[in-house]
Amino acid sequence: MALAAGAFIGCFLLVFFRRKKRAVFCILCIIYFIMLFIITIFEREPGSRTGISLTLFETMGSPRANAYVIENIILFIPFGFFAMGIWKRKDRLPACIFAGFCLSLAIETIQLLTERGHFQVDDILMNTIGAGIGVLMALIRFRCRR
Image (cartoon, rainbow, N blue to C red; front, side, top):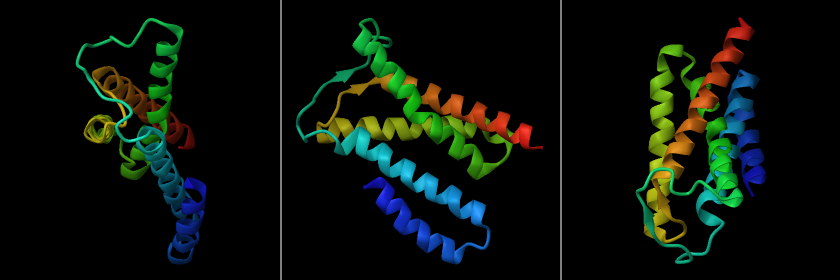
């Protein structure tokens, strides 16, 4: 679904953007955001999960829980990369990481309100770390490009 929507919107953008690299970047951003919301919100049944966990590092320990922690980090690495690609200035590093925090908080709040996931502080922290890793990867890429 995300690929189909991205391809459709991408064809539209390729017609109107003169710079093809920018159009491809926008297509990838759209595909990423659609996939992010499918994975975090629409993949679960409404009312299937409820609860709030405000204890830091509560979800760590078992192999399955640690896999979820790693998944949360990996899930937001593209966000940090795309955020730096949008702003293209290294002084925006804190703003990109804060944007990752805000997006994660919004997703957790939506999960809480729709009962499609547990509101967990650990998820917000790990998603923010993932965004930070993505920002650092973008900085390395932009430096290597110069």
